[in-house]
Every structure is written in C-alpha cells, then in structure tokens.
Image 1: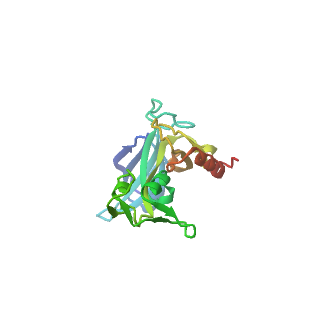
Image 2: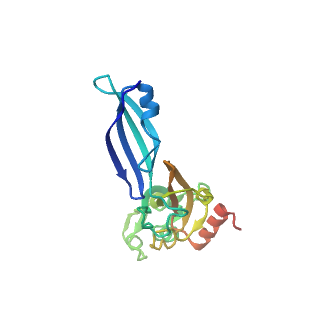
Image 3: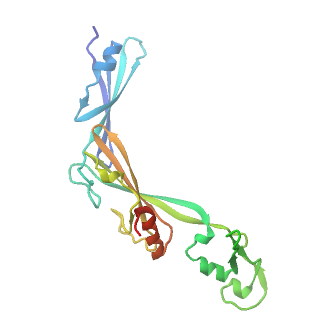
Length: 243
C-alpha cells in the first residue's frame, strides 16, 4: 500500500500560438503507483502526454514528473490575417530566408550580363564562357575601345540566390484535409502584404504536431527565384497539372 502522494510543484509555459505546456511533480512511495496512478490524465484542462519516474536522493520516494499539453485553439484555418480570436489563441508568422549557389544561367538578368561582360554559352557543355579581358569602355558598360582590363566575370559559373519559406503557425482543435495538400502556385500568402514582384509562392505540405488533444499546425510556402510570366505558367503546369 503506497503512501498518499503529494504535489511538489507546477511549472507552465504558454506560447504565442496559445499552446500551453505544464510540468507537474509529485512524490509517491510505490513505483507502480507512481508510474500508473499518480499523474491524472487531465490537469487544468490540459492533457497528459508523458510521465517520468525517478527515485529521490533518500531512495525512499519516487518523483513523478507529468507533462501536460493543450491550450486555446481555433477551428478551421486559425484566422486569416493573424492576431487571434480573443480566447488566447494566436497566429504566428515567420520568414526563414535561405541563400544557395545556383547556375549563373538562371540569373534573371543573364542576357544583360552576357552582353556587358562578353559572355557566351558553350553549346556542348552548356556552361558560360567569359572573355578574359575587356576594354575599359566595355568594363564600365559604355562600350567602345580602350585599355584592356581583366574581366571581373571570368570564372564565374554560379551566384548566390535568395529564397526562403514563409510559415503560418496556429493551434487548432482539429485538422482538415487541405493541410496535406501541396504544389499550388500562388501570388500571395496569408499575413504578408509585401509584393514579391517577379516571384511566386509554392505551397508546401503542412507540419502537424499533436499538443495534447489539440493540433499545432504550421502551413508553409516556399518563395521562388525571380521569374517571368511564362515561368509562372510553367510552374503551374509542373505542380498543379495545368496545361
């Protein structure tokens, strides 16, 4: 027969989405009772997600740590423009930029670069060849002849392109089928009013994590490189099956 367990303490953390994590500790003298009977399945309207049991320094009592999750959630899309619905839930937007080296031929101004720096595309290798030297007039973009200078583009095969992922995170009571859809090409994303001009957004699969009986959902959109109108049409054909 185990001794009556006692609550040793509580610690709680609330996130901007409204998700709450609560840690509770109890002491109990019996291992089985500590593991299976001490921590209630619900505490302060939060759901038990894990239990850990360890002996205290005296070796006579077991310390039970229960982790509870839940919080104030929203239904459906979790709000379109951010903020929340007054019950403590909120939508968190985040921009995660990326930089990667890509082929110089994909540069949106490649035709101008080839003309200014005397470049040509090798038909066999598909790579760019730059003349070793430019006249001073060519190097400044003014044209004409003059003293030669080393071509600053000599050896350049790649450049750093900026991209990134825009995300929208919210806590929900339920999840819907649309969260698992991806591949749509869109011009705008929720919560962002900045015009991306010659770029577009590609919808990625959402990340879904259970938080007790609630769901933390992160919707994501990947920013494309600089593209023209025909490239947007091509992207729709590739990802959405449009012809």
